[in-house]
Image (cartoon, rainbow, N blue to C red):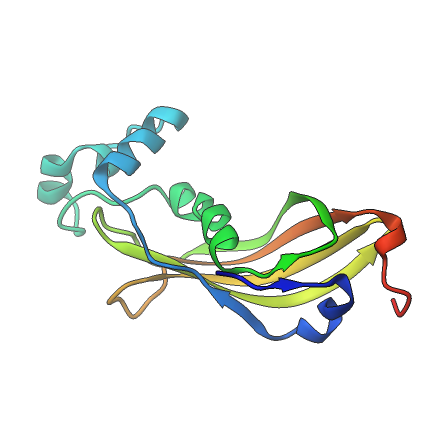
Length: 162
């Protein structure tokens, strides 16, 4: 379970690995549900027989955006909770690279390093994470990303030293 930290602890965490999530199994059912939600039914994701016959993957693979979307669950699973936080917002990505395919049935996990943190305005903190989504038993990761989030908090809770 992730520990709780204070806003006053944030600057000391820049450059440090903050957490590694539990493994998540990417099942064919998960892939099919993602295909349904996004209307992306390309056979490499949804047709195990054809994908095994016509691709070098030996079967279906997860959508890259599915692997990317798992970052939210991974974040909640392993990153410290900021006590003063009232809301978190996904601000976006500076960079995303899909390095290796995630085969149906594979397990993935996220590894998070805090790259930067900047207070913005009276009640917001932008945190930038360098993230790697690892595939169990594989040398290459599924993806690497630079992810930005915004933490909102009551301005009265802003540390005096920043």
